[in-house]
Image 1 (spheres, rainbow, N blue to C red):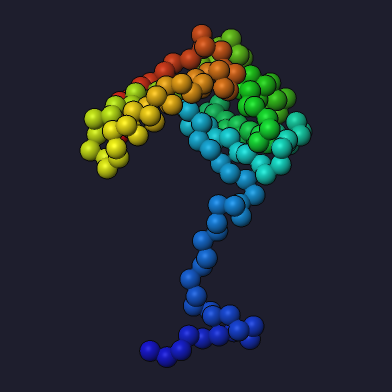
Image 2 (spheres, rainbow, N blue to C red; image 1 turned 180 degrees about the vertical axis):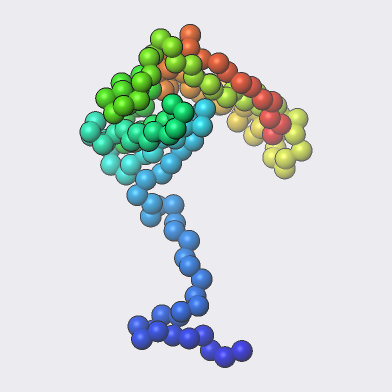
Length: 150
C-alpha cells in the first residue's frame, strides 16, 4: 500500500479521529435514578438562570436537565420550581419519584478478593441514600431493587 495522503497542512487525511480525554470535556453527564441526568460543570457554581434546561414533548411529557457545579448540592424540589417557571407543571405533592436500589452480594465470580468485595459492599451501604442526597421527599418515592453479585 502507498503512503497515506497528506493535506497542505501536513495532517493525514485518513487518520482516525482522536477520542476526547475525560478531562477535556466541558461538562460531565451523570445518570440519575429514574433516567434523569445531572451535569457537573468545571466551575464551582452554576448561576440559577443557567441551571435548568426544559424540553417539552407531545402528550404532556417533558425533559428537565439540571446543571450543578462541583460545590453545589442538587435539590430536586428546587429543580421542579425552576422548571415550573419554564412551562413544566409539576406539583410536588403529586409527583412520584422512581429510584433504583441495588443489593450487593459478595458471591459472584468476579476476580476480586473477598475482603475487597466486602469492603466495597460496606462502603456502599454507608453511602447517603439518593432521597437524602437529591432532596427528594421520602414519602413520594417508589424504589425498585435488584441483587447484584460482585
